[in-house]
Image (tube, rainbow, N blue to C red; front, side, top):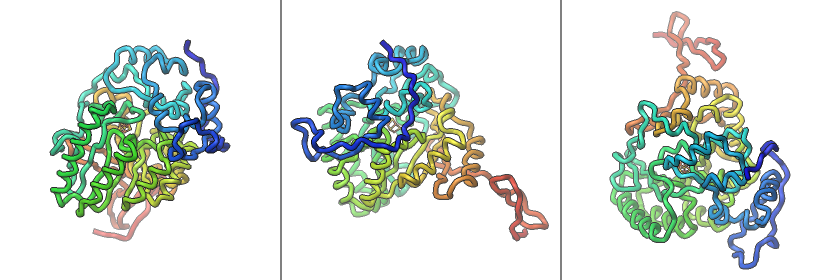
Length: 411
Ligand code: SF4
């Protein structure tokens, strides 16, 4: 029976339930204990929909992954699916579906705009002009499988195809969703060896971005193995990790993981955020722990129609990120994957939106707005044109309020 939800989903509760080591179930490894508190709204969700699950299990990232929801039947025990969502589930387009119980607690309300990022809709079945399976032409820029070399000094290393939650607008929806069975893990290791050897043979590579899928879904020993091997390559100066885990599964950022990450500085982490509803206390504590481990944190956000493409939502997200010690880094124009038209925004309007951010919030909170050009041309940063003209008064500039000012520069 579908459960009708009437409560509003406010994730801004400022009270927390502290989990103690006494809450650990028998047989639980002490090293797994990450002491991440649970905010009251999320705890209420846990008690209502997962009443038999202890706080310790809830706080265990492997329990969260094992208990991801992926079928219409599983979701319907918690949320009422719309007719459109039910149809889309039944048609099964092929983009994998998975949501961790933690993240479902943030999006389960029917009013949550984030729900559209995770649950399928029939709009995905419409292919608009210009949409492609691999719009950025990553396959053509892959000297070997799982590694993209688009810029001279950087390499994007797709360490896994697995994510804990799958976004409906994912650029790599053609690839993500692989299983984690041991046979595949073996194939993964072979893939890693080839990628690591390729990087070692290319001294121009200074910056390696570990991406996926989500690399923080790998086990601690796999992450350590990868970082160790990449760090031993003399010409690699910095390593970056691209992840959504602090947002969809903050329980993953355990003490043992932090201990590993700390060994491989300079290491940067880019976190995929979409909406201020994701700025929970769990996320805040997780980001603080990463920052305290000396890791500079940046955000990446995809601009999504009806989800975050308005001044209020973006301002709240970007300023909220600074409070979580994350520097807003990129806002991406949504890539034209097949079935993405309902997510994509108008580029000209988006430039204006980013221009409005500039005057309204701290400069530190304003990210770069970029279009990753179809065909593999790389990222192009777009800004509103503030130069109006040059005349006898000088260079005429227009500020964010559309007022004009002159700078004394003459032709
Ligand atoms: S977390 Fe990243 S890689 Fe995974 S589905 Fe979302 S956008 Fe794609």
